[in-house]
Length: 618
Image (cartoon, rainbow, N blue to C red):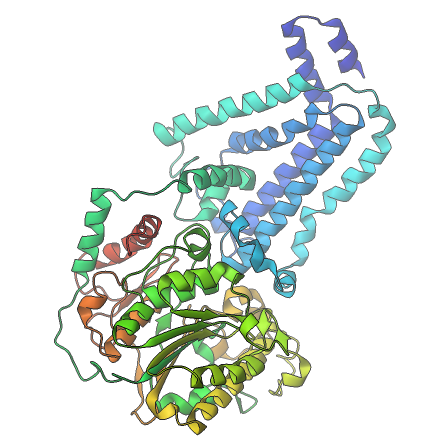
């Protein structure tokens, strides 16, 4: 109580400031909260050095000398608000600040494990996605996460012990002012010194976006990262006007990637046929033509490969929007925005040369169908803007059975067949499956693969069961279409939206006992399979990605190259001399056919972000 008695004796401004410092130095709860949040911040930074935040990769914790005074400043800035309260309210305030930050850190870690990104204000627009996601979120929990909350119980114990002693403590407004203003001044100084005048350590930056969000967090702490994110959210919310330089960059890119090759035998090969395009939840390439205990994981897909174009070196290019990004990229041949989900941030953007618009120009009716709610990932308004004439969701189906996020694949695909039959021909129908979504916990009655003991109860084993389940009912859909006389005149194309078990549970895959080499890695490969009854099957191993879906299908169905070449980031994989692809992680795969190609293709990742923000593709 000594510091507060002195405060009453010191009447001048200097005395108030002096007593403010005394309050800071003598506050048990400030010091405790500051210390534990600092420890949790460092633990957070250390954990995200591992791709799945399950351990620590000592070689990747810090990207440069850690600016420890920046760490101190951000933590002090946030917890300074505890001093505004008086009496026991101060105890409660410091406790609540610590609790909220701990919850936020854990949420960030869980989101990072599933999406290789961190929560942002853009995610606040996606709260509808939390419906039915309880099991998926729960599956991201790890034992190490307890370290983020163990101090909470210690703080409760200390608070109860000190409760009576804080009854008459006055508000420490000047303590708040010292911490808040002092931290702000230092952060401004560090920004000017390091970012503007480059007088820091090698590779050190503060308030600058890095190609790797991990580096930004390493520079700012998670607290600073989210303050910086809030600033960028404000900046990004303003209408984006493309500069003349950016417009020229776009034109140069699209002109530069044209190959101007003569048409080959694939041009208009499927002209006039119907098209059913299926985005298969979590379908990875490594399981194609593989068996577990002598049982095929994808018997339907394996069977139709001899009448399909099978692209086995095809990669996911999704980012923060995961499955919704898969829909965007495949339907528009455009890379998604780098912050948040394109479908939530820019649902009204139009794409003149989207796949549904191209198919409509060829005389097709277009339908997009989902077994979940149209608000989920904001897909319905987005797909309407992309160009689909009609969009239907779970409200248009009998929800007699749900698995994970929507109507079960068994029920949905059966009902979808009836919707397809009723469509005006020629039709283009686009749909997704959902039952093979993480955490791969299929109801027991649908598990048909007899797993060996080392796979029983594992995420990998659950993944095999989930994919086999969807494969079975895909087979029944194809049989129905064949029985109704539609399959002879319908092309069915499949692609995976993103990796599944390797995306979310890589660490668990690596821990399976007695592993088989074929399941250890997948390298972000998701197959593209274009099936047409009666054609001669062909495996095509050229490097490609989801952005290549549109130009490849458009070519097969007879669209002119001029309809998509000036806006499609991808290329026609059936008429190209180039072998490359670019991942959303900024990784370039394949060969460079001309100098500077790698840099040009990597630059389109950020340029596409700007083009979407400026609604360039309208």
